[in-house]
Length: 195
Image 1 (cartoon, rainbow, N blue to C red):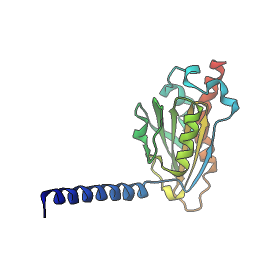
Image 2: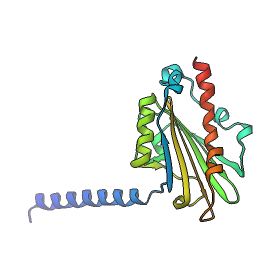
Image 3: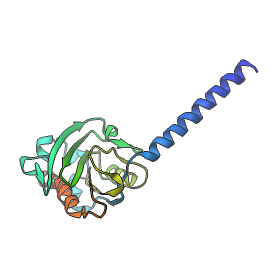
Image 4: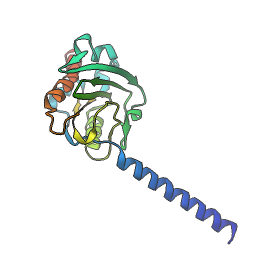
C-alpha cells in the first residue's frame, strides 16, 4: 500500500472512532425523566436584552440566606462560571456570560438550580428549546436522573433550570421542584430595576 492510502485510512479510522465515541458518551449523559420547558413572554420585556439589565448576577443575590433551606432540602454548594458550556452537554449557550449554580440535598430528595445570563430573549428561547431535545445541563446533584423532574424557563435574557430527583421509585417530586424553581424569582427584581 502506498503511504497516502495508509494515512487516509488512519485519518478516516480516527474520525470514525471520534464520532462514535462522542455519540456513545452523549447518549449516556443524564436527562430528566420529565421536563417542562417554557419560552419567555411579554412579562419579561423590560429585560429582554442584557443592554437593559447590564449588571451581572451575584451568588449572594440569587442564593440568599432565606434560600438556604427549600422544603426538605438544604443548600449544599454554589458556584459561578463564565464559560456557560462548562455546565452543559450537547448544547451551547450562545451569548452567555455567566451561569450560577447551586446544589441542594435532602434525606429523600436532592436537586440543582442553574441560571444562565444570555444576550437576549431569542437566545434564551433557543437555549430552552435545545435543552428540551439536544442536550441538557450536567448533573451535579446526587439523585437518579431516570427518576427526576426538571423545569427550564426563559425569562427575558435569563434561563433557569431546576432539576430534582428522589430516592423512592414513586416519590412525588413536584413540591421540591416548585421550591427549587422559586429561586428564579430573583429575575423579578431585575424587571423592577429596569423599568
